[in-house]
Length: 257
Image 1 (cartoon, rainbow, N blue to C red):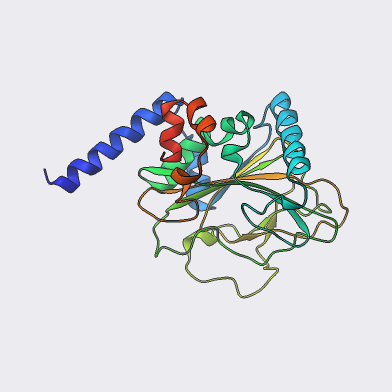
Image 2: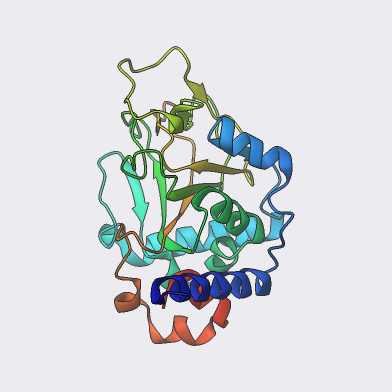
């Protein structure tokens, strides 16, 4: 066995041990969920976030926004027409549940196909008249390699008038960008609060305009292959000591810290 093979085997064992400790088993995700991720590039599930946890996440969202005031989002991305919150890893235990959830980790393992890490954890909600985005991927095209998974946790109802996410099913399989916007194959995600949208980060998707001004808060979780330097490749430098100490070893593995 070469040194490279030995390192690969060790990394695979570490992943298997960490995921098992977090409740992931070999049967996850279910066959229908795997098929949807492979064929369509996404899956949508209602009732993913328990009611009590949903309220706790909403409360924490607003508390962070009030505390950071005009600086909210400055540690991630500022966007005209939308509120952003960054660095949720370090902003309270309430957020640990999501990026360590067995289903999300299992889907990341399936799509990425090898050891991975969290590379993004933020939040976004468009204000009235804001939120429109052009089609984009959350990961640059990797010539067919599926190197990243994105997750959207819906903290409010996504309605036709509140700026739902729009996506192009199957677009994770092709290198070409869409030539029309909106596209004839566009699907708008209207779903109740507590739902989760899980998708291959190569899937073309976009935000839409919040016409009503209703709250449309969303938390975005993203995983990436550990060998790719992408987005939060500096997590080791930014994690706070209090955060590190509260996390079990398996979650530290997910963060690559």
